[in-house]
Each structure stands twice: as structure tokens, then as C-alpha cells.
Amino acid sequence: MRKLVIAISMLALAGSAAFADPILDRQALMKERGKIAGGLLKVVKGEEPYDAAAVLTQLQALQANAEKFDTDVETLFPAGSDTGDTTAAPKIWEDMAGFKAAEQKYLADVKAAAAAAPADVDALKAQFNTIGGDCGTCHQSYRIKKG
Amino acid sequence: MPLLKKLVGAVLVLGGVGAVAGWFLSAPVRLDAETLAKLGPGDAARGKRIFYAGGCTSCHSKPGSQGDARLQLVGGLELKTPFGTFVPPNISQDAKDGIGAWSVEDLANAMLKGVSPSGEHFYPAFPYASYARMKPADIADLYAFLKTLPAVAGKAPTNSLGFPFNIRRGIGLWKRLYLSDQPVIAFADGTPEPVLAGRYLVEGSGHCGECHTPRDFTGGTTKSEWLAGATAAEGKGIVPNITSGEGGIGEWSQADIANYLETGFTPDFDSVGGAMVDVQKNMAALTPDDRAAIAAYLKAVPPHPNGYPARKPSS
Image 1 (cartoon, chains in turn cyan, brown):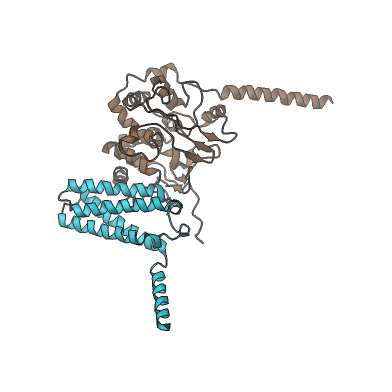
Image 2: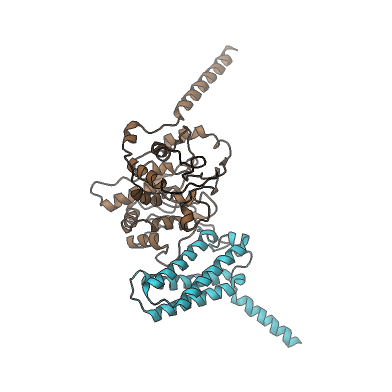
């Protein structure tokens, strides 16, 4: 019994350690997301040649990132984490349902893009514009710039 | 008490003179015949560009509109500012609720002088202090384009402002301080054409300075901190410094700025956010030349440090 209690408390501790700083964790996910999107943007703009396999790998990475965000959204945005070094808007907590809906739309669009495995730059462009639009829609309401 | 009587009399006379002077100084002033003559016939195809450069739909479409709904200019967005709540009106072609009955001269007086067809001042939340720098011919083009958009019935709610901002006539005095058709930034002779074209788009139709420049206590933009960024007039947070000064976008290349306006992605692949999301959609509808011109101008304006206070250390 005692062992079980210890095991549970250790698990709990490990759990909280993984999300010791939700602000840093969610920022890391966003940074990674931006980096992948940036790589795809170069292809969309024709600055880099089209390589279908590489594009698919990038889209899958984007999907993994979005899935992690979706799974962890509660722990990434706990109540009270709107203060400190964050640009998350208080509206996230005022309208958590709307925030989750925006995040899930993004996930669905990324999944659709990865599943479609775009064969050429025009196909990618259409998918990418939808995804890029999702970035803006969410940041329009749920992020504020701070000084 | 002859002295007191004299004093009271003097105060009354001065007050009367002041009131009369104030009444004349605050009177709405319309465009003169010479300016109206420059309107010309107007061209809807050219007007489409002005429509997007002017960002009309960002404030005048129903909040949250996407796609073609952005062309239904029914109004109704609430701009909550320290002066009160401003509600952009219906400017669709509906003759009763919108501006379908307006003449091109009416639109020109509204945009260049901030005066309504019935001769009242508009509040400068309608950014005519920027639009005043536009060419009359561009207004005529815009008028022709607006005529191609749908009529949508429905009046938006009225503004709700506290004293003294609810006295419209007072705006006449404000206009004497802030309404000018002259450029904000003077450039030397021989300045490249794209910079001047960008100045026209940014300072005029684009009205970028309305959000990106700090305001003084009467709500006028502070020209000595032009585009230095500002505390957001509406909501929380800040509007970024878009000069090359400290905290600004000095590290962005001209191509970076143009790319951001086209795609909504910053050089480090962050995405556009806040009120700029709708603005960027408008900028994406312009030509590459227009976006390049805006970028050229932003690289040429005097650098300023941030026009908003630094963030307090997090506790």
C-alpha cells in the first residue's frame, strides 16, 4: 500500500514537472509550429523546389505538433496562466470553448493537408492558405501583443 | 461694489466672446469647389484597390465576417475606447440605412473633411484625419466601387460616449489641430518614387498611423512619435512599433515587410494577430508593387523607440 502511495505521488510529481511551466511549454510548441510552417511557406512561395516527400514529412510534423497541443490543451493553459511573460489573451479563459474550437479547426485542417499529401505546389498552396488563415483567426482573438 | 460688477461684466463679455468664437471655430467645413472639381468621373476597377488600401471592410462589415460577407458593409462592430464606445455605421448601398443615397461629393466631404451630408462632424474614430491626405480622384474611384457592393438593410447602434466627448460640435476644434491634407513625413527632393507611393498608402488611405502612433490626451496622433507603436486604444495590449527604432522592425528587410503584408507571416514565422489580421487580408488584396511601396516607406521613416511603456517585470 505504502509503495502504491509513493508510486502515485511520484507519478503526480512527474506529471507536474512535465508542465512545471505551461507558458514555456506552449511557447515551445508554438515556436516549433512556426518553424515548420515557415519551411512550408518557402516552398509555397517558390523559394525552394517542390519535394513531395519532404513536404509530407513537414505536414506530418505539423500534425504531430497540433495533436500534442490538442491533447494537452488543458495543462498548457491552466487557469491563472494568463499573467507573467505570456501573450496569451485573457479571452482564452473567458471563452475556453471558442478557443478549443479554433484549435480543433486548425488540427482538422492540418490533418486534412497531411492526408491529402499534396502532389504539387498549387495543391500545397490551397492547403497552406487554409492553415495560415487558422493561425490568424486564432491569434486575432486569443493573443495580445504586450510591450 | 463697482469693481466686482466690472469684473463680472468683463467675465460675461469674455465668456460671450469665447462662446461666439468657439461656435465659429468649431463649425463643420466642407470641401471647396476647386477640390470637388478634381473628383472626376470615378472608376470602379481602380476603386477596388482603394477599398482594400483603405481597410473599409475591417470596421464596416459585421464582426467576424469571412469571404464575401466582408463586402456587406452593414456596420455594428463595437470599438471600446477610453472616450467611449464607437460603432461604425452601415455604409452599404441601402438608401435608408446605409449610404446608397449619398452623392460622390457627400463621400468626399465625409472622408476628406469628416463632415456628414447633413453637416455634422463625424468622430475621428472614422479615420478621416488620415483619409484627408487622399487624392479626390481616388475618392471618386472608391465611390464607383462602393456602388457595385450590395445594399444591406439594418442600422447599427449609435455611439455611446461620455461628456465632453458626446458634444459633436467640439470636434470642430479638434479638427483645427489635427486635420490636414499635408504629408506627415517630409522627404527631400529625389526621394525614390516607391517611398513616396508608400507614404501615400500608409499616411492616407491605409491610415496605419491611427493605431501604430501614440495619441495625446485629446486623441490626436503624436507626429513626433509617428508609427512608434502605441498602447492599444481598444482592448488590452499594444500595437507594435513599425519604425526601425529600438523595439521596432529595423531587422526586417523590405522584402520581409512585403511578405508579411502578403502572407501574414513574420520573418521568424510568427503569424499576424489581433486587429492586424483583417488589415493583412486587405493588404494581401493589393498588388506586389503597392506592398513593396509600403515596405519602402516604412524603411525610410525616422526611427523611434517604442511609443508605449515597457512591460512591468512579471511577478
